[in-house]
Length: 400
Ligand code: C5P
Image 1 (cartoon, rainbow, N blue to C red):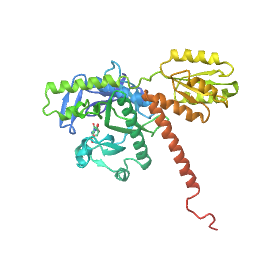
Image 2 (cartoon, protein in one colour):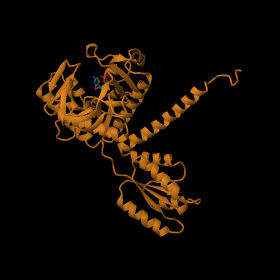
Image 3 (cartoon, protein in one colour):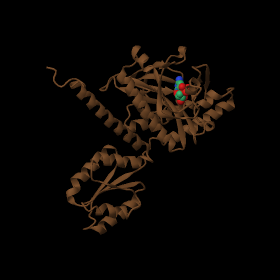
Image 4 (cartoon, protein in one colour):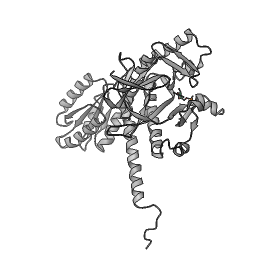
């Protein structure tokens, strides 16, 4: 990549200016591995390659889901372990999301059963300060020390939970339990969304705990390195093997599984609703097919289309806009082994339902449905806040 001068160096990465692009940076991951605030430190040849691949694929998945991240491109191929990112002013916090009790949480809470499921997920903030060993910090202290404002703390909490859920879904597809995860945030340093909060830094096999089959003893993450009693070549080779396995599995995280929604309307009068549902599906990135075919008037055509589609696409959903008799939906339901949904009603709700069904096998769609739901919730809360700002609650109707 076309790099400018080096501007910062961390324990496992180096940051460079991007030549001629003031709003961007080049992040290069190195072969270093460290633990205990740098007290233990080693080099594993090839680790930088694996870390860059893992980070790039994790960020590409998050971007595809619609989460705001700093990642632009690079890192996956033979490109010197470098990725291009949007330049950020980093917030000096480590944001940890936990779905299962482990690590420092169990050390701090001896009564808590290791491996216990955490409901709801727990979000913790740690101040990035090696000298003080990255202490836990409360939201109130974050605000008091001017590190972030309350709205940013809420946004970080929400985005961190979404990131965890999306990655947990991806890992679950591979029969691996995501135990916990650390991410970092920055504010975009330039461009049209200057100041926007985005997931930044790197997310690689150092940043999470992952337990295949939910079994801690099968762990594949950096905890293996932390746990080494003596660091020898054999131990480091085992750690490298695990990192290779993880990079390989994460390789398919951003791959969307081809899915298709076939929309059937029973009559020409229903095409406006058919088109609105198609549009809502398009917004979620779902490919659609549209047909007008009547159960009563062109039954042979309906069956012919079903046969054609069922033979062609592995993952297919039908949405039927029947007339008042509901005949088209019944006909499709009884003629295909694929799921069939009713196309009348709120188009956005129908599209979301389709996405949820396909999301069972597709992490990108899973993430998109989570984001749509989160945005809907926050729009309602915002409207409520606005209406109450205009007319304070509890005030007597007429004071005069
Ligand atoms: O040690 P603790 O249980 O607090 O770690 C929670 C999660 O954050 C783990 O997945 C760990 O790998 C990650 N972490 C990290 N960098 C740190 C501290 C923790 O990536 N400096």
